[in-house]
Image (cartoon, rainbow, N blue to C red; front, side, top):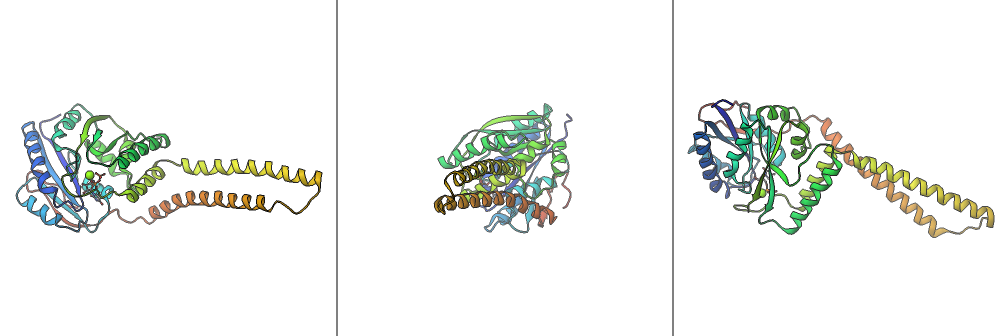
Length: 323
Ligand code: UDP
Ligand code: MG
């Protein structure tokens, strides 16, 4: 590749006023290293509608560093959409996605870039260990990656988050995927191209707490499954067929018994059990259909994915285009 490679580090931040002042000097140091290597690097911070001083902190950082661009969304849209907004801004060169809390060490970026220069399009960090995260989070995450790998036909590498580098053509491909329920890990997998993993140790948060509590992670998992698999719908069909077979067998038994021993009014407990069981199965199947229908409804509204409330381009060379 040429000596004029461009790299934009995209950082989504939601209430990270305490972490950013610690993170930025680390990123700045890495950008120096990259510059020495012929790569023009800059950083784009996306403020995902923070309620704390994140925006003020970011403006301070941008005032002191010409390589910094800022984007502020009109409200909190969630990490997946904030990243989409950031990546939409990167119209030249590659993009590197980084968490604002320092859990993805910026010091490893040169490794990602080296793979990019070797011709890889999707260089993703794979966590070998996770510091400072609860046993419950680690084990449910472990389970989730195994389930989604089974269900989805799209490759979703295990223990791999959003910490990754995307080549210009991977970015172009990703830009074409405008679905609303954005399960980014799956979208990255869907676009394909040349993929390689960079193993790393996930660090502790610099400050603050995770924004992904149990409930949010559960909904995130549901989004992942429903966006990349229709297996639950098929499962509902199988459960229906299975219960129907059971129902037919039971009906034959009841009719046979009445035929041989006469029809006495009895069997109220069995009838209740059967009615309740069938009712439950139907409700579960309806719920599964509803999950997909709801997403279809959201998708059909065709609203924009996000709204921008402020944009500050980098002051350095090769500034990005306005939204
Ligand atoms: N984040 C965001 N919008 C949100 C929630 C989180 O932009 O609505 C950012 C957050 O600032 C951080 C990254 O997404 O940079 C990962 O969030 P967090 O650390 O809470 O998740 P975890 O690392 O625990 O999975
Ligand atoms: Mg984090």
